Image 1 (cartoon, rainbow, N blue to C red):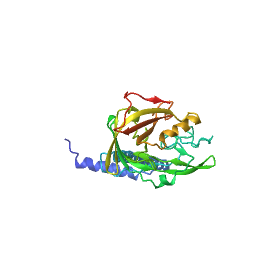
Image 2: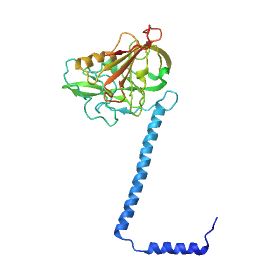
Image 3: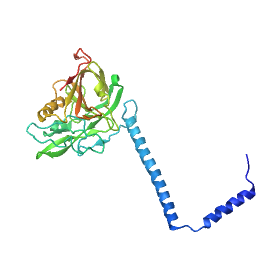
Image 4: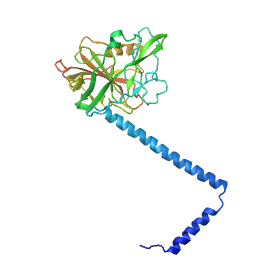
Length: 294
């Protein structure tokens, strides 16, 4: 290795000092300033975007059911159009559907329709406490925490209506829907896309698959009974009203899991995948590949 002599070092320092003493033109100062601003802006953008990715990865990790991290309670507000992957709940007398799926997509890039009901939640629903904590579906390697999701009230057709929020990372249990062991409809919804995409593989669940639900410290075993694919966003009003029965109250215990479909393509999010599961002791459809399209 060649070691520079003291003379060379001295000459280099003198040249550098001479360059620094040279007068700097306004144009050079401007270019230097702009260069520094662009460098700092690039660094800020790099750290900002990197921070978002790190936060999203952490939120997805925390939403998994196999750890003790605090479950993310990030919601996409019902006040934002097209946010929830549930079925549109519209009164039969209504001729106007609020928050149409053809309007501008929300910032979440999930152009999905919120659940709308002209019948305000009853006092019993308001007082009801959701207890589902975790859902496991081995056939699609799903293991997710569950949080309770509520609603906001909006005026639709001049009447107050309830519009559901949706969990962004975890699975959301509709506040007021049944809990395991109560003999009613346990309504669970999640996104097929976006940051959480907790139900991205729900379409691939079939009759006969097992579902384990953890609620109030207990484990409940269910088996998938049917898979429905229903038209929603472009369906006639009568069809959309009929769809709401799928998430209504029942006189028997079942789980209803809902997400949008398909996740991409020209018909993106226009359909809903609806999975019905019943307690393990209940009879199940014999054909594991059976699904219904409405």
